Structures are given as structure tokens and as C-alpha cells.
Length: 481
Image 1 (cartoon, rainbow, N blue to C red):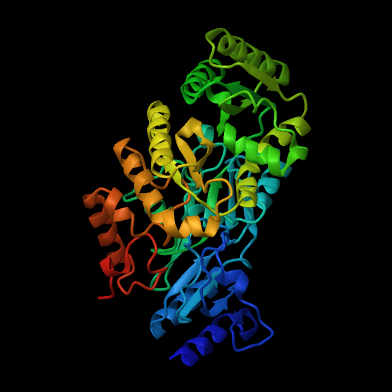
Image 2: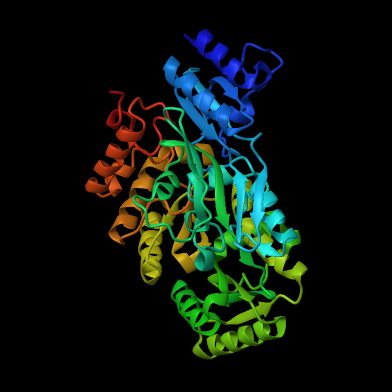
């Protein structure tokens, strides 16, 4: 069967774009290993179509041969959702060749790009037209728009502009049957039935393959200022967030919180970055103010905000970046926390969301619980407090073997954290998705009616379960008919 499928794939895209282990000179590890190194599968083939019609032909060939597909963009995901399993029977569908910016409409404030377009490339295309595409995250130099949409990526400016879903107006999608949905609308109003766009966004390639998207653009702000503030507690950070909303309004585009231990790791492993104000503060906050008027107006707003915060005691000290270079340096510190944590050793990562008002109580209770259950455990708390998204990571006790810690404690730590998340009406995945890493946890923390609806959608759109099986929903819940 596999020989027939490989022949059909070669006919669809050309033999040079079908990569297999049969060629000893071909190394497929870049497509088979996830970004965090947690999984290393084995593919039947990696197929690299060059256009939507070729994607459709690939999907049809796989459907006819009973072979499942794993769509893949930049392979920067964090939940093992875009690499093949170890069976050697799955086809990885790489969208990397489909990387064009198809069109940019300045008057309509929209851009249409192919799924393999790297996020940074899109940001630069918008900037060249003096416009802004606001999705911003640490992997923007390698992640792709198709992957961003498939996982409904978040990032640092969700507070003002929303997730990837909020930035998308239309999609082009190849269905599980190999048909093409031409939905690349640039309309902001289209009330003609079910919103299929939102169905495919966040589905992690389990319902179809996103091949292109029409996305929103915004005018470039006249000024963008960054401030770094030391706060005595997470309660104080929430208080500062309220003041920031009051003083900056829609200009508040970023509000990141970083725990003292998280910043100590950056100081330890990347001392050249010179982390400010961290040693004497339980938390630091990074704020961004995007102003449509002028830099002077933005600075005046920041000064008033920080004066009020100092008077109310929710900020103990603060600095405002004096240049774009300084601002980038502050953001680089924030983005270096995961890298510093990796330098420290293997760790257990959580991407959770909690109502902002309940975040301090959640952290206080869950921190104490973990430290009581696992003496010496270290907590690396940081994330997008402005939209209630916290990266609640758990590091092994100092001097402990990280690999052994994961093997022994990961399941228990996940249960403790996820149970606490449910207690505080949160979500076990805020922006990274479910993938295969959390697929067995979803039934424990998702409303059962919602899960039944998700299964019904999966069955309707992909009855043979060929699209990225084993991700988001457990395989036994969506078996082929």
C-alpha cells in the first residue's frame, strides 16, 4: 500500500518533493522531532507541495490509500502536535514552500498570505507599507502563519489586538476529502451562516489543512514606549494592570509579569542582558504603550501612570526605555526566560489561563501546594498577565537530575496544577494548544457537552480520522466509520 501512496504523492508534487528514509542521504529528523525534543517519530514520507492544488492532490492520495496526514508549518509547537508518530506510516505535509505574501490591500487594511509564510516575513511586509501586523511571539523568526492559526497563537500583544483568531478575516482550506474551501474574504461583516473560519482556527490540523489566510492590518503607532516596573506581589501587579487600563486605555498593548526566580535564571545564564530591578522585588512587570499621537504624549501618559502606581504602593521602582534599542533589550530579557530555564535543566511546562482577578490566589495556593508536596521544587512563573495567560513552569530542586525529576514527578505535578486550574475556572491550555501532550487531560478538564460537540464536528468533517489523528481528541473517540 505504501508504495502506491508514494507513487501517487510523487505524481502530485514531483518526486523531488517527496522525501523518504529510502534515500540514505536524506535526513528527516527536522520534520520528525518536535521543537522541545520530547518526541521523535518516524514518517512514511515528508511531502512539500508548492501550491493549494498540490495540497489537495496530496490529501486525496492519502485518503485513497488510507494513510493519515500530519500538517506541519515551522514545527515550533510546544504540545507535540505537528510531528508523526513512531509507526512509519504517516505522511508529514510540510507547508514550507507555500510562503508567499499574495496581496496587501492598504485601503482595506488586509494582507493575504500562504500558510508557510514565516510570521516575521509578514511583519516586515506590513511594515514596508507603514502598517502593523501585531501578532508577536518569541518564535516569530521561524513559526508560520498556518501554524499560528492552527493553534490560535497568542503572544505579547493579545491584550490589545487579540489572538490569531481575532486577526483573521478569511481562510483557504483543503478539507479531509481533498476539496478546497475558497474563503479568503477580506470582509469584516459577513453574516451568512456558520463561521467556518473560526472552526478551523485552533483545530490543530485535525479538521483540514489551512493553506492561506486573509489577515487584519493596523496603522503603525506614532510612538511605542516600554516600561519596566518592580512590584511587591502578584496582587500589586493586578492593581497596576487596572491603573494601566485607566491611564493608557487602548494604548496598553503589552503587560507581562515575571517572577523573581524566573528573572534570576536570566541573570544567571545571560548576565550580559543586565536584568533591572529584579533582586529586591517578588515580580517585575513589562508594559508597552502604543500611542497614536506622539512620543511626548506617550511618555506623559506613562509618567502619570507610574506616579499613580508609586503613590498607591503597587510599584516600588520603575524605568522607562529611552530608546528603541533599550526597549528591545527589555523585551529580550522577557523572551530569554524560556531559554534560561532550558539552560537550568529539563522542566515541566504549563500554559494556563486564569481570570486575572483570581491569578494571585491561584499562584499563592498552587505554589504552596507544590512546595509542600515536592520540597525544594522551584517555580518559574511568567507570562501575559494582561490577558490572564500564565506560563506556570516547574523546575526540579537545585542539584537534582532534571530527566529523573520529569520521569518521577511530571504526571503528579500536572494533576496538581490542572486540578487547581479547574478549581479557579481556568483553562489547561491558553495559547499552545492541546496536541498529543494534553490530549488525555482534556476529558478531565473540558465540559463534556463541549467534548461531544467537538467529536461530532470531527466525525462530520473527517470521518476516516486521517487528519492529524491523536491530537486534540483521543483516537478512540473519533475512530473511522
